[in-house]
Length: 175
Length: 263
Image 1: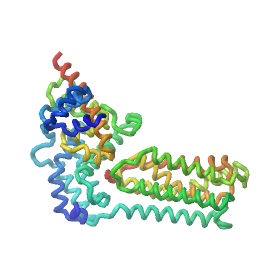
Image 2: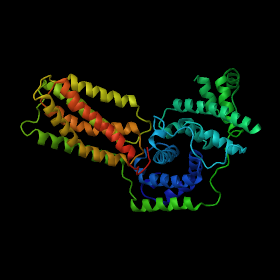
Image 3: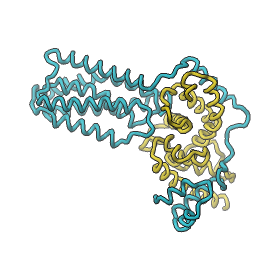
């Protein structure tokens, strides 16, 4: 990161090779659209270059990068929606449009996508980062600008809600 | 959440120690939690297949090229505190300029006791500096709304309590003059603040702190210059425009494009 801050393009390439694809996967799950995710990856890495002077020495890079990616997705959704469609906290609403097929698709991945899309953003992001990106709660707290205990509470509620949603979806596909 | 529940969360995806297993057996919350975690794909660390294509994507390559081009244009990173210094300099110029222009016949027109005048001025100055810092500094934690609102409340209360109570001009005449001055003096700090705010991700609390700080420069000029010290005048002509300008800053920032999304 230090070499990248000094303008070393090789250092940037190393970061890009390591993180571009995971960030793309994360953004696809977050937005429900692979094509939007591609645009957002572009914004994320452009922001990374422009804002590298804001990186605090000694802090962790991965949570910072994912914070940028989350902000880019939030901003994109905010601009594509009317303000009355956002929650009072300015977050994304519980249900987001996605590229997934209709509700009768029985694939696990589709079911999980649909269940995740029904969670409010405050619960969806910690679960995506924890379960799919393998980040610790401390890292997620860094990425979300929250305390670790606040992240755990959100993730806890999110997992509980997911269990209910997936059970309901499972029942729906059985019928 | 009990400490054991928190430890269960830390152990998600791995084997649970014996003491935690017995806790899970008696804790409905933890059973729900484990159920939800396992429902996402079963075994630990077995995430869904990444949705990204296996072959190098043209979209990702375009992202890389664009970022490299930006890096070549600006190879040297600018530390964040450069922008903080620039904004503080703008605030200082407007503060001094405002005092010199409005205070041609004496910079301090406030007729309260010198101690009260200096105390409230110092408090407002802290708000201006602190708000600017909150607006631009890279943060590990989000600033709590309560802290920003409390700071604004303390400054507002100090302005009213520290007023002289003396009326210098007819109410409406004084109100329009002070409102006009406050808005005019806030244009430059607000514009500079908004430009710099667009270089970070939008956070309403940060935009509010920035707005309070930018409009706080004019509030400070009026506090020192204005001879009217009645509570009615201070609230309607000094504090109300200050709060409205801060809200305008939040609204304007929410409508402006974000140049980069770093926290």
